[in-house]
Image (tube, rainbow, N blue to C red; front, side):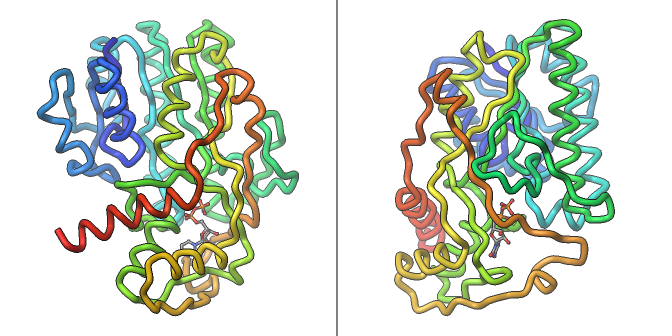
Length: 323
Ligand code: UDP
């Protein structure tokens, strides 16, 4: 098969491209290298069947050519990271909504199956834990910029599902919970690469708020495996699935774990949210996925525990420091 992976030079996209090539497929990665990085796919450029096209997912003619040229589409291109979302809200909304609309229109015209990656952010500040796919999405006010991301991604989901309802375009929506692994950068605020970088450098580990807020982290290899299985399963079409890990940890506990495993004597520094982010930010207290639905359909259970996730990130960052 020949796949189009939008956002193919991003953190998750590059791992997906690699997996598809390993499975014997050919891949065209479409990425404008804004939050994606060429280094993420540099090692793939030599492989047969891999093409990188540097262009925006909002560029209609390029997207159309790429869609015609492939048999199925993984749509991962998106604005990412809380920091970017708060600092550049216009770019965030436009990339998410216009990009997805462009890709879906081409897929609809040429009848290409598409898997769209969404986010656990769409659950918003729901407090019924764990979050199941049929739960309400509880957004905050439009004056709080963080919610623009959740709303834009929710609109993407609506649009994909609308294509399914109106013309039976084969779509699948995957809601990803905090995904971590090699190649993820802390530049856009992601907590694990940031803590590890701080820990390895012997710098203070910055815990925002009181550190009681918790998250569940998923290894990128588990996510990629689930994306591939969902794309292949005919019964996944027209549906939404959580992909995540249900091992929960508070940010203070996470900082202590990183402090212990990086071995340096980094202190833990508590940073108020008002200092960590610009005004217009609201953090989520807990975010745990209900994995019943995806387990039932494709037998998904996360293989990687937090210990392994941290080990992989530390190994990569330590190698880049010495290399
Ligand atoms: N966080 C933190 N210190 C940092 C970066 C993030 O304490 O240096 C916290 C952040 O406030 C949130 C959690 O870590 O509660 C996860 O943040 P991330 O941006 O990785 O993902 P989110 O789940 O917020 O999308």
